[in-house]
Image 1: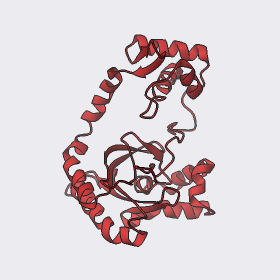
Image 2: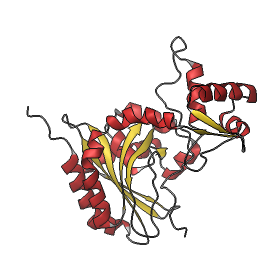
Image 3: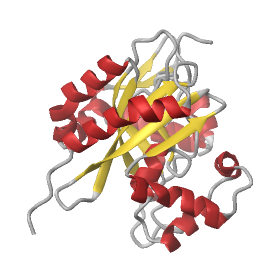
Image 4: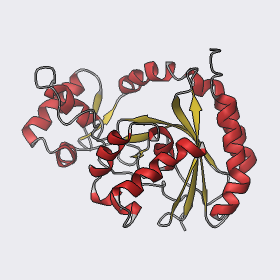
Length: 276
């Protein structure tokens, strides 16, 4: 096994947000979407790309890609290395993230508690939120074991097939969930085996009754435990996730030993409900 195991889900899944069947053409600005698509080409594995690399990832056509890259470079969001002819994001991109970080006061407030859970369990602990049909890792405290589940900040995974996503989606109206289930791409649907749509729906709704979700990833040999973080109205706004390997815990052991600790932390960091 590698020094760090891969994340518990496909890292290159389609990240197109599903806010509706199609954007409103009267309001949608395609140029903005294309510029953001170029910035999203860069990640921790590919921090520098040539025009050809970007075009291959975006599919905009070389001429259009060149114009958008030039514009982003001129605005200060990309820099070009003359020796390699590669482009990479500048610190100006990270300035955009400051406003997001500023809104994450809860994560900052609870960072010591998340870090303590990772320290005491020696497993990977994450703060996860929902973005459209995907979950996003917004804070991560890695396991101290040599082999562990690796969930870098910014990682995105399909929500329906993950324990965190099910906790975040379980209270949606059944009709809305069924629509999402029927729209799943084949690789995501395969996680559920031969289950029917109603069976998958029941599986996704189960965390609403249980108060948590546990999933097993046989490919990554991992177990994922998720519990809800609630706001003052009782609405689930985030998830505390703990990921371990099946070489250290079987499902029953993880449920007996790790789940109570995840539930306790999620309850501790949730905002108390306002009195009625």
